[in-house]
Length: 340
Ligand code: NAD
Image (cartoon, rainbow, N blue to C red; front, top):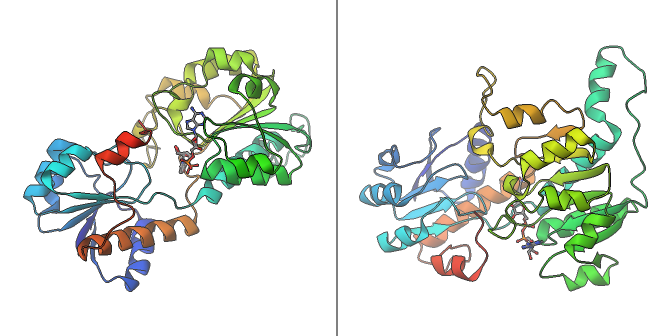
């Protein structure tokens, strides 16, 4: 199939080109993010490959359809940026990559915990400047600490297993508990109890209307003083203004973020030559006990390989008229909780 790969970065080109040796699609890589304004770039392509920041609303999809596009292959799990009903009415198939690196994301959450606890980000700079003082670098043993895990799906499960390896006690909250985890020494409890008892709280649930600002003033007030909060899930699970207030008071002792509620204007771009206009994000950057990465938890070579292989297989399935297990339909959205 002839496919326009929108928003393509060097790593997308590398992994898709390598995996495509096994599929033989004709891939054309475009740097632009797909939206209604530039959808006509897809003229002459049967497929488009899109990512999280592409905007496939009704107008964009109508233009894609007029250009001859019949499949949208998302190289991500989320599909909140596609108007599925519009796609269906235009006869455009939408496919995605539902799972690509649960271990990679879980390991990144652990990397944030370790770095924050042992202040690796500070130590790195100090040593480079010839400052070998230890004051300000004091950490704590993870062994025996209580880790609260909110959401025990694929990533939460991998995270629990790693933290168990450190000798932590795991408390979990999930409206749909995983019986295997419960049988393996992970204790399920309600959210309030988890927040009260945990030294570290790590978020691994999806963003839905129910989980929007799950961590707000009220939730933080229930947490231990000096708690460590980790969010590698979705930015808007956390009310950033509440978090800033509680960092200032010392209630939150450590904050590790891979996601941010207004990340759409910042992440995946180099804006180092521009003025940072987001005052809230700028305030977060002033705290030495806050460590932020730019939505890179998924970013491992294993994940990129899986993303490329699954996306190319999805395209082949649609091209050959096979049943594609990774097809997304509006029915699927109605029967599962849709991420915002
Ligand atoms: P998953 O669907 O396997 O698991 C999500 C779990 O959350 C499920 O067990 C579900 O029952 C639970 N859940 C739903 N509502 C909840 C609530 N109100 N409170 C507590 N738990 C709730 O998803 P996953 O693959 O484990 O991914 C988890 C999240 O990680 C995704 O939703 C996504 O937002 C995020 N993610 C981030 C990155 C990254 O690079 N930072 C990459 C992939 C996924």
